Amino acid sequence: MENKQRMKSLIRKSVLLINPYVPGKPIEETKRQLGLKEVIKLASNENPLGVSPKAINAIKKALSGINRYPDAQGFYLKKRLAKFFGLIPENFVLGNGSDELIDIIIKTFVEPDENIVTSESTFLEYEIVAQVNDRKVKKAPLRYFKYDLNALLKLVDKKTKLIFIANPNNPTGTYVNREEVAQFMNALADDIVVVFDEAYNTFIDVNDYPDSLSYLKRKRNIIILRTFSKAYGLAGLRLGYALAAPELATYMEQVRQPFNTNLLAQVAGLAALDDKVFLKKTRRVTLEGKNFIYQQLSRMGVGYVPSIANFILVDTGTDSREVFKLMLKFGVIVREMSQYGLRNFIRVTIGTLKENQRFLRVLSKVIKEKTR
Ligand SMILES: *Cc1c(COP(=O)(O)O)cnc(C)c1O
Image (cartoon, rainbow, N blue to C red):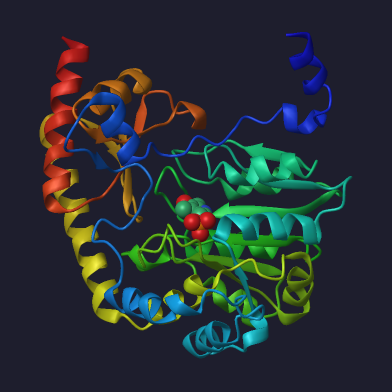
């Protein structure tokens, strides 16, 4: 015990204060622990259709080359991205998932005495990574489950350097629209960097979603984050990218590790970008699944927050940690939201039709049991 204390005293204070990120429970672990044969995971917003076949082919071809270091510049992937967006390769920074880019961004822009503004009940990595880097985070409350950009503005002070906006927000699935972002950008001083984290942009089915790229083109200090983890089905390979002005991107390039994106991720990302068929199917299955789940939840009298992403925040009307545990016993992994300050909510990823049906069956059973 004494030894344990002595070792603990070696750890930096800000690290001791971290509220660790709790990942979605893995399928294999759940099967093992509960002795279950069939487990479905709807907890991490992954692609239920698997991996883009084009990406798999590219990975197979590249596999025998992994004795070599990856291309430190990510030359081909950046070139392809540049063409895709009508930009230049210097506009892009690749990351080992967009998670890593959050770290790179904080390290590149925020001085030790400066702060970061974001929302409550948003992607937890912003705060965790800030804390690891000893940077202060100020959080505005959500308004009706949505980022309240006016409340964010009110938190901005002379020491604010960076603002994180998850759009759509994870875990609520809500978004700030074009008009709201326009007003926000108008009101904001230009010496603050705004990050629009658009991990779910491929699922969007609304007309008033903001065109964040237009702010980049108008030379505003913004960074857009995108990922291959969700719609492209490459979460396990770890690949994301940032779009920024070359004047900013060049310094992020200096902060990142030289080989942060691996060789297989680079070729897979390149191939997945061209897999329109897979992307289209993913989008269709997600949107159909979303409507199906909405319908069934309404029939069951269960509340939910309308989402423009591939997940739905569901109001279980009771302690979501209990609901999570009971659902797990029936082989359905969802995410309980207590860590996000949403005690009665679970977040469920939209799966295949079969998975959605099973989720709804189990949820209905569990809620009945809890409220009997
Ligand atoms: C899933 C997610 C990401 C992280 O994606 P990776 O590229 O897998 O690191 C980033 N931001 C939000 C809001 C997410 O939900």
